[in-house]
Amino acid sequence: MLRKRIIGVVPVRGGIAVQSVGFRRFLPLGRPEVAVEYLNSWGVDEVLLLDIDPGRAARGPDLDMVRRVSRFCLTPLTVGGGISSLDHVRGLIRSGADKVALNTALMADPCLGTRIAETYGVQCLVAGVDHRAVEGGERLVWTDSGRVPAQEGPVECARRMEALGAGEILLHDIAADGARSGFDCETVRRVVQAVGVPVIACGGAGSPEHFLRLFESTGAAAACAGNYFHYTEHSVVLCKTSLRRHGVNVRLDTSADYSEARLGRDGRLRKRDEGDLDALRFRHLPEEVI
Image 1 (cartoon, rainbow, N blue to C red):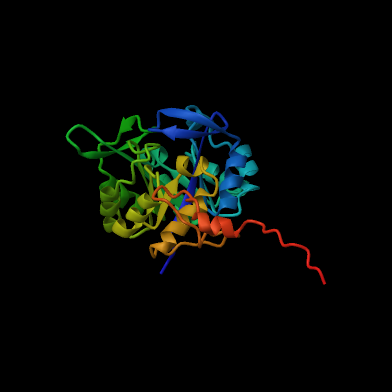
Image 2: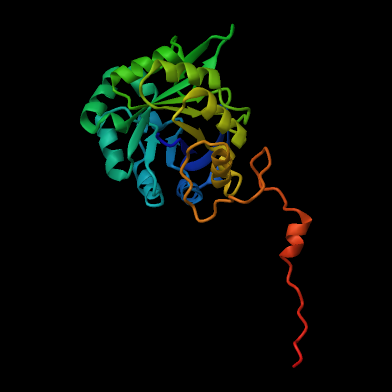
């Protein structure tokens, strides 16, 4: 049985790693390489580096940034943003990326996905499917950073991306982005049942319970989170510890695993009992007189 993956997302805007809320509001975090180094040391299984700079599509991928970031990333690195040709993919692979993530470019040029898959293998191509509900509750796929509706549902789009050669589907809930309200398990479950490739859920992570509900109810292969991980030290380890206690098969091989710690429903460490803390205090032993 394959282990469930926990993926750390690092959105980048203007060369700075940011916290994204609904694809519309952004708060700076710092240099991307620092954010990736922390995520790597905290035990994520993969890193997803998304360059969401408004002018990135016209300029192409920032290869220099990818080279800097890849030096600090010891796990598989997926890069998205500004990719519109096979040359861009070649440049990213040579700069340290293991996989590429495409969304708008695949909608505009579906054959690009096939060319990438034929050249580098399906495992190299992650198809981004950004979705949001419209009036009446129907969910549609959106492109151009959530600004343009594609007149297609996430299930139909995921099937089409798989047929074009995508090795994974990155299902991103725009409305839940940064909201910490939980994953859209219903849409994830429908897409998982419709395709034969791994599905990655993104958007809405706010506690280990959200990850647990996703993995127990949908069949998703992986879960992505950015804001939830960036603001709490060791949040990745604590999340994985909580998942393992509930029987979810995840990799947990960091030096500290908090296996005996008490965790709250929010995934944070809880204070130990006073008796346990008292037992840890130094005790004065009077000098022995012989």
